[in-house]
Length: 254
Image (cartoon, rainbow, N blue to C red; front, side, top):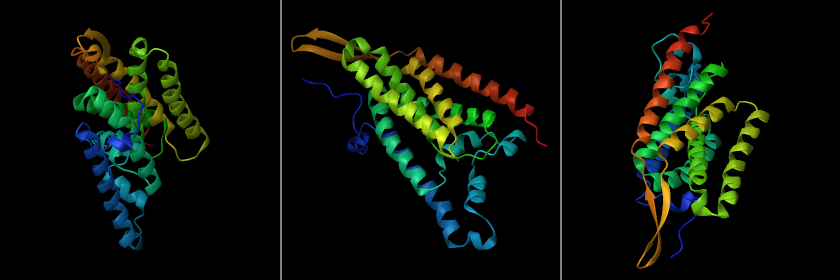
């Protein structure tokens, strides 16, 4: 029996039973986008409050507010906010493509660990290297891309000749989007790079290994999880916390 490729269209499986977390995150992103966008449309501008101001009120990354020492939650809330319909659309497509694949392969808990730890690392990288306000799930999505790269690399012996093509496809996606980020204004590329690094680190910790064993029915492919990998995810999270605690007080508020 042929096995499905680990790089398939996530849209076709978005509403499958194997991707509940992807569905929930996608719906939350849509709802959270719709509320401030609707508020901006129906009258906030008449009061002199722009969509940017609304996003800052809702939890966008704001270096000054974070540096004040009591709004670390913005590293988390920024992942659910988007600056426009196209921003939301592109991130939703990417989430359903890479996210459904990672959740199906690694399971919901590991998917959530990669998504949020990678997203937090993207937010921290943005905080350190970019003074501008930022929103978006792009850092978390790049973490999923990083995890998929690791999964293919770890199982390259199982995938055989296809591994090079698969790595080339996912790697090109990552590099092309980072390249676009350096050439197009108002794209938080530091969040992309930070998220990608976070996904690579978490992927090495928790993405499963594939094994092919012989059975009465012929070769069977099984997944071998690595429970110890969660210690690696915890270690990455602790490093993130330490970085935030060290870097945040050093930001010049003047």
